[in-house]
Image (cartoon, rainbow, N blue to C red; front, side, top):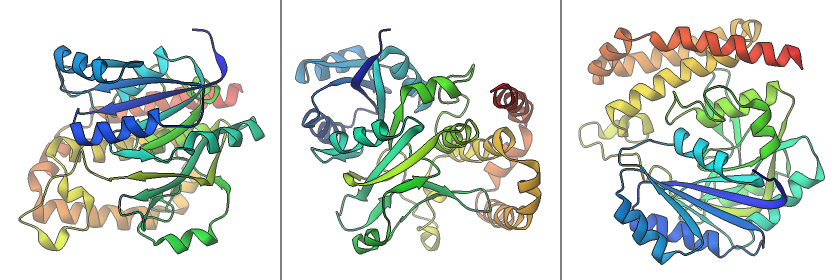
Length: 323
């Protein structure tokens, strides 16, 4: 792989929903930035379907997976096959403004320690903020900055450093990704989906990289369009996204949360924030006991991820100390 210093590699992961992927691809190919390459990874899609997409979008490289490989594995493969100095990872439910990439690339070039950058990502109503980047709570829950606030809220949020970037619109410097890469890849493939962006952000912070918010780069995100189902039985819990995902995704959400903490958290900071963490866990397990006991039983039967997470932690700490 020959690294091109101005090339941006765009890697899209999709379930092949025509309306979502079409809008996403059109916005990507409509970028004003001139040096781009495109990769699309189609989950649960046949070779024939991938060929149809390739015919409609010449110049875009399509790869199909017969099964649903979720998010991490396709992203890792796309990053590995690409050659840009910068990598933009996208969900297919994202639409970029024409100058999105053009606005963010200078953020990377202004400071060589900036390893990730977020634009101003709005919901598809154009008025409500989806994310301005990632922060995190004392309960160890990733928090999307500005989530659910209205547009005028952004006037108080200036360009500056953030903890990380949301995986739906994740812009990275390749050298940062290479620096924090593990045996499991840039993104931990054991995760599949959920917490993978938080894990990358945490590893990058520990390795001394920065993340930055760029308010003038604008995108829209139809959050949950590819993962959430309608919850017809628990209307009063509608506002909680966890209640709208499948059993497999709920299991991943829980395992990945604990794996991320084991891999990255400081023991002393964990103890300091233990009351907030316990309060979060009480609420989560109360929901499971009363409304989703089957998930709780399955979760309690499989703690195999714990030992592998501690092994990964040792590798991360060894790398940080070595540097």
